[in-house]
Amino acid sequence: MNVIITIQHPAHVHFYRHVITSLSSDGHDVHVFARDKDIALDLLEHYDIEHTVLAGKADSLTGLARVQATYEARLLHEAMRIRPDVMTAIGGVAVSHVAPWSAREAWSG
Image (tube, rainbow, N blue to C red):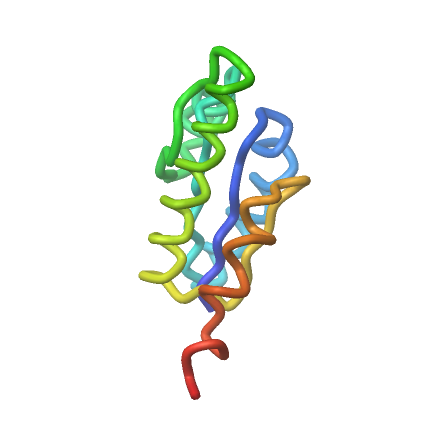
């Protein structure tokens, strides 16, 4: 099974770290995508969780909109490449926007 997990806040690392380990140990392909927010990337590295950073930090409201748009576009690109069976996030609107376009069923005819 292909799984995408998105991390947009340090608390998400703590929430998902055991799930990532368990799924990976069971032979599933787990793809973790993150946004550079607070210490989220430091925590991912501390727990030795392989991840890809999709967007940086925002310094203003306009910057936040730009970061979110970049994050969603890059997540869509990765999801189209991976064709996940499952995508999950905590309060991450990007997954709700991207999932319908990347689902295996959407393109299988």
